[in-house]
Image (cartoon, rainbow, N blue to C red; front, side, top):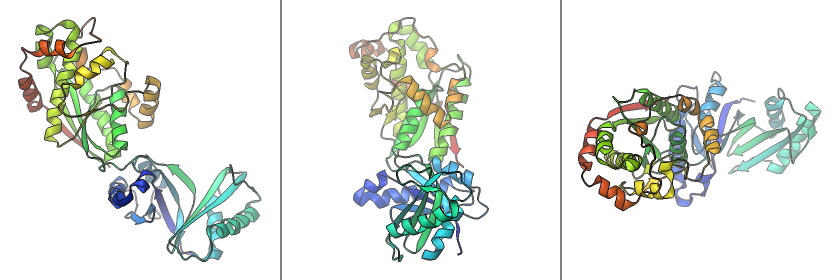
Length: 389
């Protein structure tokens, strides 16, 4: 009964892609290969409806599981053992998978695909179930078992596992183009960036700072956030973009209530220039409708007017509690909660406009050298790169 450890990876949305399915599968396999580098995992291999990852005996299973749980495109994965097994060997392998686990009830779930294995899935369930019942003395519960032992048979390979965990979900990063995410050091924008990654987009990050009028804390925290998020897309670029020169002129020459909206319009213009340099197709923000003065319906429209490409807002209908929950799950909440000096607080108006109009902001900007501010900010940007693992 020669067996070896395996991870067997399942996807959901990729299976709905019809003729393009193989393209998404190939991207997922590539991402799995990168994510599992240095863990003792072998080369992932496509099987019908799933991906098989052989593991070396000395591989740290928890490290492998942690990496797999962050891969977008993975619905769930099982960690177990397998090989070319005969029907009479299934019971022993299944018992090995469950014997050290604490359970009162169990079920056997067999799946068979593209295989000439002599037993049907139903026959396997009955045969192995009877064996485990006899060895364990536990009860069978097919509706809500404490423990489920999965047996997957694909071709001549049998994989048995009782350890099934959730993956990142969504689509594999790299399957839906590239975007530029405006990321602050706050809670919302990292969650928005991760949500877009989960939809298959590769993210380039743009962070705006007001140094030297503020300290470097926001840039440091933005870099920490990008480093965390890079675990989901394996390579990231962060643009650290100065906003203070434009803010100084806006504060001196434009109506005070419009300052925040005008700052954000300037960010949109600069980020659009970065997107064109990076061949990105959209901008991403962490805006949530009505959360602050700049995120009223009217102000969101006025700010978006300054962007030359589509603006995506994954959190627009999310409340703060939902966003905080996601930030905790991502691991960014602790960094985002630390105090720092954000760019938009520089020369912040006492009573910001909540219903700015296009006519008002265009009039206020009519004397500004908008193109000059954009060019200067991008030219002065510091660009950092991050890699995982």
